[in-house]
Image (cartoon, rainbow, N blue to C red; front, side, top):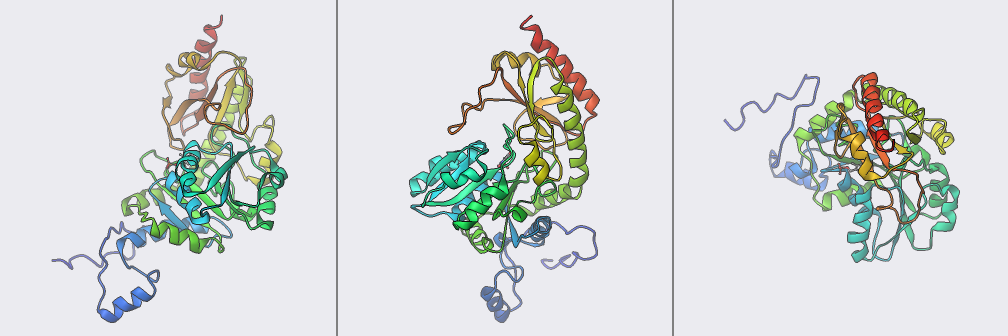
Length: 382
Ligand SMILES: *Cc1c(COP(=O)(O)O)cnc(C)c1O
Protein backbone atom coordinates (compact mmCIF):
# COMPACT_ATOMS: atom_id res chain seq x y z
CA UNK A 1 0.00 0.00 0.00
CA UNK A 2 2.95 2.33 0.47
CA UNK A 3 3.20 2.84 -3.30
CA UNK A 4 -0.51 3.44 -3.92
CA UNK A 5 -1.37 6.56 -5.78
CA UNK A 6 2.12 7.98 -6.05
CA UNK A 7 1.99 8.78 -9.73
CA UNK A 8 -0.89 11.22 -9.90
CA UNK A 9 0.98 14.45 -10.36
CA UNK A 10 0.65 14.96 -14.11
CA UNK A 11 -1.83 16.77 -16.40
CA UNK A 12 -3.46 19.01 -13.79
CA UNK A 13 -3.54 22.80 -14.10
CA UNK A 14 -2.01 23.23 -10.67
CA UNK A 15 1.02 21.60 -9.14
CA UNK A 16 -0.25 19.18 -6.50
CA UNK A 17 0.54 19.85 -2.86
CA UNK A 18 3.78 17.91 -2.56
CA UNK A 19 4.37 17.26 1.16
CA UNK A 20 7.57 15.36 1.91
CA UNK A 21 10.32 14.72 4.38
CA UNK A 22 12.00 11.54 3.04
CA UNK A 23 12.70 11.22 -0.66
CA UNK A 24 13.39 7.65 -1.81
CA UNK A 25 16.26 6.86 -4.18
CA UNK A 26 16.21 3.94 -6.64
CA UNK A 27 19.60 2.55 -5.62
CA UNK A 28 22.99 3.64 -4.31
CA UNK A 29 24.13 5.07 -7.64
CA UNK A 30 20.99 7.25 -7.67
CA UNK A 31 21.68 8.36 -4.10
CA UNK A 32 25.30 9.22 -4.91
CA UNK A 33 24.24 11.26 -7.93
CA UNK A 34 21.88 13.23 -5.67
CA UNK A 35 24.58 13.80 -3.04
CA UNK A 36 26.89 15.20 -5.73
CA UNK A 37 24.19 17.64 -6.93
CA UNK A 38 21.46 18.05 -4.28
CA UNK A 39 19.73 20.82 -6.26
CA UNK A 40 19.21 18.68 -9.37
CA UNK A 41 15.91 17.24 -8.14
CA UNK A 42 14.12 15.94 -5.07
CA UNK A 43 16.62 15.26 -2.29
CA UNK A 44 15.18 15.80 1.19
CA UNK A 45 12.00 17.63 2.25
CA UNK A 46 13.80 20.64 3.71
CA UNK A 47 15.32 21.36 0.28
CA UNK A 48 11.84 21.72 -1.18
CA UNK A 49 9.47 19.87 -3.48
CA UNK A 50 7.58 20.75 -6.65
CA UNK A 51 5.25 22.93 -4.53
CA UNK A 52 8.17 25.11 -3.42
CA UNK A 53 9.85 25.21 -6.82
CA UNK A 54 6.62 26.29 -8.51
CA UNK A 55 6.27 29.32 -6.23
CA UNK A 56 10.00 30.16 -6.25
CA UNK A 57 10.17 30.00 -10.05
CA UNK A 58 7.04 32.14 -10.42
CA UNK A 59 8.50 34.83 -8.13
CA UNK A 60 11.89 34.72 -9.86
CA UNK A 61 10.13 35.13 -13.20
CA UNK A 62 8.48 38.35 -12.01
CA UNK A 63 11.80 40.14 -11.45
CA UNK A 64 14.02 40.86 -14.44
CA UNK A 65 17.64 40.26 -13.43
CA UNK A 66 16.79 37.61 -10.82
CA UNK A 67 18.82 34.42 -10.51
CA UNK A 68 16.62 32.72 -7.91
CA UNK A 69 14.17 32.99 -5.01
CA UNK A 70 14.09 31.46 -1.54
CA UNK A 71 10.99 31.08 0.66
CA UNK A 72 10.74 31.77 4.40
CA UNK A 73 8.23 31.12 7.19
CA UNK A 74 7.57 34.89 7.45
CA UNK A 75 8.55 38.17 5.86
CA UNK A 76 10.75 38.92 8.87
CA UNK A 77 12.63 35.63 8.38
CA UNK A 78 13.27 36.61 4.75
CA UNK A 79 14.76 39.93 5.90
CA UNK A 80 16.89 38.51 8.73
CA UNK A 81 18.27 35.66 6.62
CA UNK A 82 19.10 37.96 3.72
CA UNK A 83 20.99 40.26 6.10
CA UNK A 84 22.90 37.35 7.65
CA UNK A 85 23.83 36.18 4.15
CA UNK A 86 25.57 39.52 3.45
CA UNK A 87 27.22 40.45 6.76
CA UNK A 88 29.97 39.26 9.09
CA UNK A 89 31.62 40.46 12.31
CA UNK A 90 33.19 43.91 11.91
CA UNK A 91 30.79 44.98 9.17
CA UNK A 92 28.42 47.92 9.34
CA UNK A 93 24.82 47.82 8.16
CA UNK A 94 22.87 50.94 7.16
CA UNK A 95 19.09 50.80 7.54
CA UNK A 96 16.61 53.37 6.27
CA UNK A 97 14.85 55.10 9.16
CA UNK A 98 11.56 54.18 7.46
CA UNK A 99 12.21 50.42 7.77
CA UNK A 100 9.73 47.94 9.18
CA UNK A 101 10.25 47.95 12.95
CA UNK A 102 11.17 44.22 13.36
CA UNK A 103 14.02 44.72 10.84
CA UNK A 104 15.46 47.29 13.23
CA UNK A 105 14.91 45.07 16.26
CA UNK A 106 16.81 42.23 14.58
CA UNK A 107 19.77 44.47 13.81
CA UNK A 108 19.83 46.09 17.26
CA UNK A 109 19.36 42.90 19.28
CA UNK A 110 20.79 40.02 17.24
CA UNK A 111 23.29 41.48 14.76
CA UNK A 112 24.86 43.77 17.34
CA UNK A 113 26.13 40.94 19.65
CA UNK A 114 27.60 39.27 16.54
CA UNK A 115 29.81 42.32 16.03
CA UNK A 116 27.76 43.85 13.22
CA UNK A 117 26.92 47.50 13.90
CA UNK A 118 23.90 49.34 12.49
CA UNK A 119 23.31 53.01 11.68
CA UNK A 120 19.97 54.46 10.56
CA UNK A 121 19.70 57.04 7.81
CA UNK A 122 17.22 59.49 6.32
CA UNK A 123 15.15 57.63 3.68
CA UNK A 124 15.22 60.81 1.55
CA UNK A 125 19.05 61.04 1.46
CA UNK A 126 19.25 60.08 -2.24
CA UNK A 127 22.79 60.49 -3.62
CA UNK A 128 23.71 61.90 -0.17
CA UNK A 129 24.17 58.26 0.85
CA UNK A 130 27.76 58.79 -0.39
CA UNK A 131 28.40 60.94 2.71
CA UNK A 132 26.69 58.43 5.01
CA UNK A 133 28.50 55.20 4.10
CA UNK A 134 31.76 54.36 5.90
CA UNK A 135 34.70 52.09 5.12
CA UNK A 136 32.96 49.37 7.17
CA UNK A 137 29.57 49.59 5.45
CA UNK A 138 28.86 46.26 3.74
CA UNK A 139 25.09 46.35 3.32
CA UNK A 140 22.22 48.85 3.02
CA UNK A 141 18.64 47.85 3.82
CA UNK A 142 16.08 49.92 1.93
CA UNK A 143 12.29 50.05 2.07
CA UNK A 144 10.37 52.14 -0.41
CA UNK A 145 7.85 53.46 0.26
CA UNK A 146 8.09 53.01 4.04
CA UNK A 147 5.01 51.11 5.20
CA UNK A 148 4.11 53.66 7.91
CA UNK A 149 5.37 56.99 6.53
CA UNK A 150 5.53 56.33 2.76
CA UNK A 151 8.80 58.10 1.84
CA UNK A 152 10.00 57.00 -1.60
CA UNK A 153 13.74 56.34 -1.86
CA UNK A 154 15.92 57.28 -4.82
CA UNK A 155 16.96 53.69 -5.54
CA UNK A 156 19.18 54.29 -8.62
CA UNK A 157 21.11 57.05 -6.81
CA UNK A 158 21.65 54.83 -3.76
CA UNK A 159 22.53 51.63 -5.65
CA UNK A 160 24.99 53.53 -7.82
CA UNK A 161 26.96 54.70 -4.77
CA UNK A 162 26.69 51.26 -3.13
CA UNK A 163 27.68 49.37 -6.28
CA UNK A 164 30.79 51.50 -6.80
CA UNK A 165 31.92 50.60 -3.26
CA UNK A 166 30.98 46.92 -3.38
CA UNK A 167 28.19 47.41 -0.80
CA UNK A 168 25.24 45.01 -1.06
CA UNK A 169 21.78 46.60 -1.28
CA UNK A 170 18.60 44.90 -0.08
CA UNK A 171 15.04 46.18 -0.28
CA UNK A 172 11.82 45.34 1.50
CA UNK A 173 9.51 45.48 -1.54
CA UNK A 174 6.35 44.36 0.24
CA UNK A 175 4.33 47.52 -0.51
CA UNK A 176 4.89 47.51 -4.26
CA UNK A 177 5.33 43.81 -5.06
CA UNK A 178 7.27 43.06 -8.28
CA UNK A 179 4.14 44.06 -10.22
CA UNK A 180 4.66 47.73 -9.27
CA UNK A 181 8.43 47.99 -8.67
CA UNK A 182 11.26 45.82 -9.97
CA UNK A 183 14.18 46.70 -7.71
CA UNK A 184 16.80 44.42 -9.29
CA UNK A 185 16.53 46.41 -12.54
CA UNK A 186 17.35 49.53 -10.50
CA UNK A 187 20.57 48.00 -9.16
CA UNK A 188 19.33 46.40 -5.91
CA UNK A 189 20.91 43.00 -5.14
CA UNK A 190 18.19 41.30 -3.06
CA UNK A 191 14.47 42.03 -3.28
CA UNK A 192 12.38 40.87 -0.31
CA UNK A 193 8.63 40.49 0.10
CA UNK A 194 6.34 39.60 2.96
CA UNK A 195 4.15 37.27 0.87
CA UNK A 196 1.89 37.44 3.94
CA UNK A 197 0.57 40.72 2.51
CA UNK A 198 -0.48 41.16 -1.14
CA UNK A 199 0.69 37.85 -2.62
CA UNK A 200 -1.20 35.80 -0.01
CA UNK A 201 -3.94 38.39 -0.26
CA UNK A 202 -6.50 36.68 1.99
CA UNK A 203 -5.01 37.11 5.50
CA UNK A 204 -4.57 33.37 5.97
CA UNK A 205 -0.92 32.67 5.18
CA UNK A 206 2.41 33.81 6.64
CA UNK A 207 5.40 33.63 4.30
CA UNK A 208 8.34 35.63 3.02
CA UNK A 209 10.52 35.54 -0.08
CA UNK A 210 13.93 36.86 -1.08
CA UNK A 211 14.89 37.12 -4.74
CA UNK A 212 18.57 37.70 -5.58
CA UNK A 213 20.63 38.67 -8.60
CA UNK A 214 23.34 36.29 -9.85
CA UNK A 215 26.03 37.82 -7.61
CA UNK A 216 24.11 37.30 -4.35
CA UNK A 217 22.11 34.17 -5.19
CA UNK A 218 24.68 31.56 -4.02
CA UNK A 219 25.05 33.28 -0.63
CA UNK A 220 21.32 33.71 -0.15
CA UNK A 221 20.65 30.10 -1.06
CA UNK A 222 23.37 28.78 1.26
CA UNK A 223 22.33 30.95 4.22
CA UNK A 224 18.69 29.90 3.87
CA UNK A 225 19.60 26.23 3.83
CA UNK A 226 22.10 26.48 6.67
CA UNK A 227 19.60 28.29 8.92
CA UNK A 228 17.15 25.46 8.29
CA UNK A 229 14.29 27.52 6.88
CA UNK A 230 11.33 25.63 5.53
CA UNK A 231 7.75 26.48 4.57
CA UNK A 232 4.96 23.95 4.15
CA UNK A 233 3.87 22.77 0.73
CA UNK A 234 0.30 23.66 1.70
CA UNK A 235 1.27 27.28 2.32
CA UNK A 236 3.17 27.40 -0.98
CA UNK A 237 -0.03 26.32 -2.70
CA UNK A 238 -1.95 29.13 -0.96
CA UNK A 239 0.67 31.72 -1.92
CA UNK A 240 0.76 30.50 -5.52
CA UNK A 241 -3.02 30.67 -5.65
CA UNK A 242 -2.81 34.27 -4.40
CA UNK A 243 -0.22 35.09 -7.03
CA UNK A 244 -2.61 34.04 -9.84
CA UNK A 245 -5.00 36.89 -8.98
CA UNK A 246 -2.46 39.42 -7.70
CA UNK A 247 -2.54 41.65 -10.80
CA UNK A 248 -6.33 41.95 -10.74
CA UNK A 249 -6.51 42.49 -7.00
CA UNK A 250 -3.80 45.16 -7.09
CA UNK A 251 -5.71 47.08 -9.78
CA UNK A 252 -8.70 47.25 -7.46
CA UNK A 253 -6.64 48.02 -4.32
CA UNK A 254 -4.88 50.80 -6.25
CA UNK A 255 -8.01 52.39 -7.73
CA UNK A 256 -10.01 52.24 -4.50
CA UNK A 257 -7.13 53.52 -2.35
CA UNK A 258 -6.59 56.46 -4.69
CA UNK A 259 -10.30 57.30 -4.61
CA UNK A 260 -10.31 57.21 -0.80
CA UNK A 261 -7.00 59.12 -0.56
CA UNK A 262 -8.22 61.89 -2.89
CA UNK A 263 -11.43 62.21 -0.92
CA UNK A 264 -9.53 62.37 2.38
CA UNK A 265 -7.23 65.05 0.99
CA UNK A 266 -10.23 67.35 0.63
CA UNK A 267 -11.60 66.66 4.11
CA UNK A 268 -11.34 69.53 6.66
CA UNK A 269 -10.14 67.20 9.46
CA UNK A 270 -7.18 65.94 7.42
CA UNK A 271 -3.85 67.80 7.41
CA UNK A 272 -2.20 65.67 4.70
CA UNK A 273 -2.40 62.28 3.05
CA UNK A 274 0.77 60.20 2.63
CA UNK A 275 0.12 58.37 -0.60
CA UNK A 276 3.01 58.49 -3.12
CA UNK A 277 0.67 58.42 -6.14
CA UNK A 278 -0.89 61.75 -5.10
CA UNK A 279 0.76 64.78 -6.76
CA UNK A 280 0.86 66.45 -3.32
CA UNK A 281 3.26 63.76 -2.02
CA UNK A 282 6.82 65.14 -1.63
CA UNK A 283 8.32 62.14 -3.49
CA UNK A 284 5.69 61.94 -6.23
CA UNK A 285 8.22 62.60 -9.03
CA UNK A 286 10.49 59.76 -7.87
CA UNK A 287 7.45 57.52 -7.53
CA UNK A 288 6.34 58.24 -11.08
CA UNK A 289 9.84 57.63 -12.41
CA UNK A 290 10.42 54.22 -10.80
CA UNK A 291 7.04 52.62 -10.02
CA UNK A 292 4.53 51.39 -12.59
CA UNK A 293 1.62 52.04 -10.22
CA UNK A 294 0.46 52.02 -6.62
CA UNK A 295 -1.16 49.57 -4.24
CA UNK A 296 -3.67 50.02 -1.42
CA UNK A 297 -1.77 51.08 1.72
CA UNK A 298 -1.36 54.72 2.76
CA UNK A 299 -1.75 57.02 5.77
CA UNK A 300 -3.37 60.30 6.72
CA UNK A 301 -2.26 62.89 9.26
CA UNK A 302 -5.06 64.57 11.19
CA UNK A 303 -5.08 68.33 11.82
CA UNK A 304 -5.50 68.19 15.58
CA UNK A 305 -5.78 65.86 18.55
CA UNK A 306 -3.60 62.98 19.67
CA UNK A 307 -3.74 59.18 19.65
CA UNK A 308 -6.43 58.79 22.35
CA UNK A 309 -8.75 60.93 20.21
CA UNK A 310 -8.45 58.46 17.30
CA UNK A 311 -10.68 55.98 19.17
CA UNK A 312 -13.69 58.13 18.22
CA UNK A 313 -12.76 57.70 14.55
CA UNK A 314 -11.54 54.10 14.57
CA UNK A 315 -13.77 52.26 17.02
CA UNK A 316 -17.01 52.97 15.17
CA UNK A 317 -15.82 52.07 11.66
CA UNK A 318 -17.98 49.38 10.05
CA UNK A 319 -15.76 48.34 7.12
CA UNK A 320 -12.27 48.66 8.60
CA UNK A 321 -10.91 46.01 10.97
CA UNK A 322 -8.40 47.07 13.63
CA UNK A 323 -5.35 44.87 13.23
CA UNK A 324 -1.79 44.34 12.03
CA UNK A 325 -0.76 43.22 8.59
CA UNK A 326 -2.39 44.43 5.36
CA UNK A 327 -2.79 43.43 1.72
CA UNK A 328 -5.83 41.22 2.32
CA UNK A 329 -9.24 41.61 0.70
CA UNK A 330 -10.59 43.35 3.81
CA UNK A 331 -9.85 46.95 4.76
CA UNK A 332 -7.83 47.63 7.93
CA UNK A 333 -7.08 50.68 10.04
CA UNK A 334 -4.21 51.29 12.46
CA UNK A 335 -3.01 54.31 14.46
CA UNK A 336 0.72 54.92 13.88
CA UNK A 337 3.34 56.38 16.23
CA UNK A 338 6.52 57.17 14.30
CA UNK A 339 8.39 58.86 17.13
CA UNK A 340 8.42 55.63 19.14
CA UNK A 341 10.34 53.92 16.30
CA UNK A 342 12.51 56.51 14.53
CA UNK A 343 16.03 57.50 15.51
CA UNK A 344 17.50 59.35 12.50
CA UNK A 345 14.62 61.58 11.39
CA UNK A 346 11.68 63.40 12.96
CA UNK A 347 8.60 64.85 11.31
CA UNK A 348 6.72 67.45 13.39
CA UNK A 349 3.01 66.80 12.82
CA UNK A 350 -0.11 68.64 14.00
CA UNK A 351 -2.09 65.51 14.91
CA UNK A 352 -2.05 61.71 14.96
CA UNK A 353 -1.31 59.44 11.99
CA UNK A 354 -3.85 56.84 10.88
CA UNK A 355 -2.87 54.16 8.38
CA UNK A 356 -5.42 52.57 6.05
CA UNK A 357 -5.16 49.35 4.07
CA UNK A 358 -7.84 49.59 1.42
CA UNK A 359 -9.39 46.23 0.60
CA UNK A 360 -11.63 45.04 -2.20
CA UNK A 361 -14.89 46.51 -0.85
CA UNK A 362 -16.92 49.16 -2.70
CA UNK A 363 -14.91 52.40 -2.23
CA UNK A 364 -18.15 54.36 -1.80
CA UNK A 365 -18.90 52.32 1.33
CA UNK A 366 -15.39 52.97 2.65
CA UNK A 367 -15.67 56.72 2.05
CA UNK A 368 -19.08 56.90 3.77
CA UNK A 369 -17.63 54.96 6.72
CA UNK A 370 -14.64 57.32 7.01
CA UNK A 371 -16.88 60.36 6.59
CA UNK A 372 -18.94 59.32 9.61
CA UNK A 373 -15.76 58.48 11.54
CA UNK A 374 -14.16 61.86 10.84
CA UNK A 375 -17.35 63.60 11.96
CA UNK A 376 -17.13 61.69 15.26
CA UNK A 377 -13.48 62.71 15.47
CA UNK A 378 -14.16 66.41 14.86
CA UNK A 379 -17.06 66.45 17.33
CA UNK A 380 -14.49 66.03 20.13
CA UNK A 381 -13.07 69.45 19.37
CA UNK A 382 -16.33 71.34 18.76
C1 LIG B 1 4.39 42.64 7.42
C2 LIG B 1 5.65 43.18 6.90
C3 LIG B 1 6.83 42.46 6.99
C4 LIG B 1 6.93 41.15 7.72
O1 LIG B 1 6.12 40.16 7.25
P1 LIG B 1 5.69 38.94 8.23
O2 LIG B 1 5.26 37.91 7.28
O3 LIG B 1 4.60 39.49 9.10
O4 LIG B 1 6.89 38.55 9.02
C5 LIG B 1 7.97 43.00 6.46
N1 LIG B 1 7.95 44.21 5.86
C6 LIG B 1 6.84 44.93 5.76
C7 LIG B 1 6.91 46.24 5.08
C8 LIG B 1 5.65 44.46 6.28
O5 LIG B 1 4.56 45.21 6.20
